[in-house]
Image 1 (cartoon, rainbow, N blue to C red):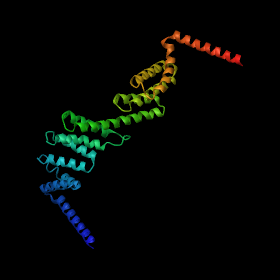
Image 2 (image 1 turned 60 degrees about the vertical axis):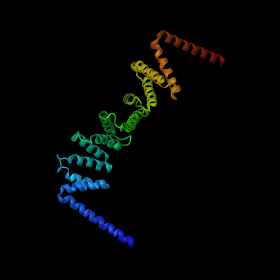
Image 3 (image 1 turned 180 degrees about the horizontal axis):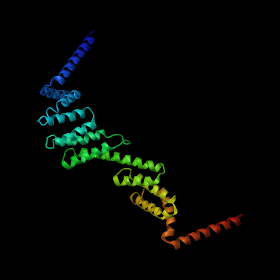
Image 4 (image 1 turned 180 degrees about the vertical axis):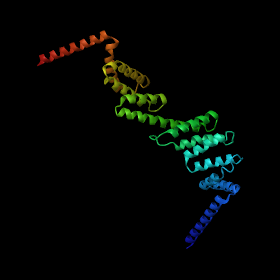
Length: 291
């Protein structure tokens, strides 16, 4: 019985509260709306606070309260976990109130909100790139900030995400045996993310892609492509001499090297070919005798 009574009282209180709130929205008492909006914010009722701040922001435009309202609106949206819109509101604050005492905090929140809004790796990463640009802007203005170390961690996280997305795209071309497109994408990965933790595998795929392009090339492009693949092999073994891929790549290197001998030293190549033919003929003769 008592439980039902308490529940009934709670409903009455909530209905009364909602009624007062609706009256406040329609009251036209802008100073009271501002005061109550701040109270709602401090209580954690960000929805009601934001609605009130939205209702009075044009009224107080150009006054001393304008930047405080803009500040609260951005943080209400942030606390509602609407991070992309919050980032936009912080951006507007920074543009409108560059001399504000809230400037540093809001510039940081621009980047942080976009960082929180950064999507899964396979999705479009425009927001991630915005976050990185925002953080770079913050650090350029506040190089000695106490937030610097944490921002650098966020930047590393996002750089890793972007490099992984680029890696997956390039790997997709490689696995589908679209080697020409793979070469372009893999080279862009190395250019854009030279310190990526996927670097070894990227360079391995790059060598293999160039190797496949060489051995399957039309005659007039073979020399150039064999040479390019051979150079890629040297780049790889110079950087990763003890790689798990080393043995496999060495075999392919021999194929490349054997082909290019005819261009490096034509006389030696012809002599090797003649010796190979002689050895082959002798072996055939020996086999016939054994028969």
